[in-house]
Length: 378
View 1 (cartoon, rainbow, N blue to C red):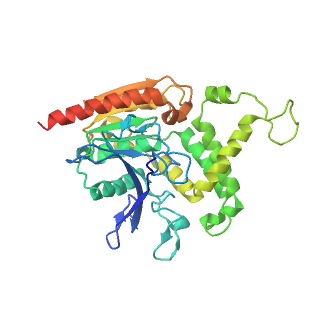
View 2 (cartoon, rainbow, N blue to C red):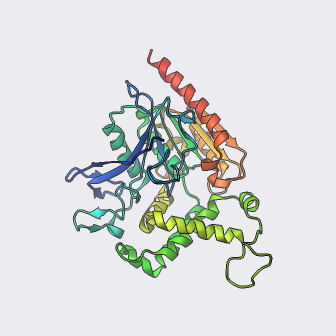
């Protein structure tokens, strides 16, 4: 087995810091990234993929001594949707994250202590600006495609509207252009769970006790929103945990209770609480049409590339109607748009587990884009 490794590169050494949307100057910035496949001679086969809220740069393959593959391993690899026999895939951890890219848990060079809450608020635009530095560092002048699901889709959107000449196509999966009041409310409850944990210590918990209880509860809340009622019923129903009757106490009786506890336990071992606060707020701040009085058509006016928009019938967190609104705005700009809604019971998680349907759509779409790109050079 050929293992993959996470690589690191540092940009924006002072005084040449990255100017964030807020006006804050941040530097140096380290970016963690992985690549899969080979970059061709003219560097025209590169695809940049983006992770969701709690993802990281490890999108595919295996690290040494780690049994679990990357988060989109079913989609990235030889013969898969993002075929590494054809394409060069790049995945990076977002700015504000906690898996190698500069974020709240990183050391602030001015204080030689972790940033904590002194880390500036980052936006999706800031994440993309950092990714652009990485693409330039790799010597790639134009991407064949940018692609992502959920928060990854927001990054792909910003690439398409802020850097329209730097990609040929854009794949948006289970995403939207702004958070609704309900989505913001769910995130706020999750944030309050973390901040009400005494071990959070106003974000200054590094080297001390991490806010396990608050972060666990946040993960439980989040995971419920990623599934659908049907998928939870099919997977758990009212099954009991190794018992024949109810205990009539506050121990775990139901399998679904045990499942949420298990997922939360794994999560607190791999993710930083402050990063969860920052990145969830980043999502809530995102509103593509805010500067255009809510007019999505105007918001997409600068885009030039082709789009594939995929949504799922049971996704109640990022429902299909939001994708339809986006598609309508894209078509109003006379852009090449393919809009597919996949019938799935997996809820928002469908973008990670509904492999067969997505694979056919994406592989055919990329083949068409590649063909157009090749003909365009002649």
